[in-house]
Image 1 (cartoon, rainbow, N blue to C red):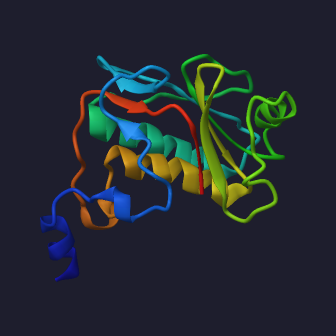
Image 2: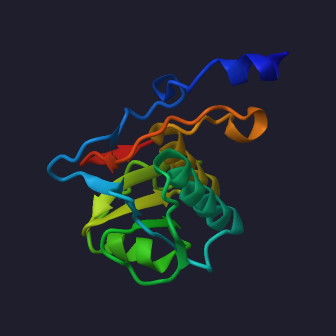
Image 3: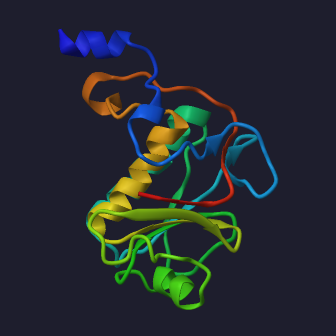
Length: 176
């Protein structure tokens, strides 16, 4: 009965699911990161050295972008940044993330040393999702999925997905 209720409820309004303010928008704006637009999705860069759960969540995000926009994001295992890509990694586990922090381009003061925390911020033209630990990185990845319109109930109860042609991430740093 619960499954039927969730399936009939319509798309989930994600503003009630996270403490992070809505950072997704569906129109271009100055400084916004293009997650997907005009049939092209940003690639997701993940290190094979990061936690397997992080690599798995990155793949899920790629599929979720496809569910929303019709164009899935390609997941690439690489250690070098690519401008215009989504870079995911765990602080202390991924040298690229640690390099951004050391160079002062990514501020992780609000999440470093915390449990299950993350920061999402545009750095040098790429969107960086950095977690304080394995779960923090995974939560940051799935927070993007929620914010773009994929119901957390998608897999369990076939929750509907909101469709949008273009998806952008607002300029700024978003932490939880």
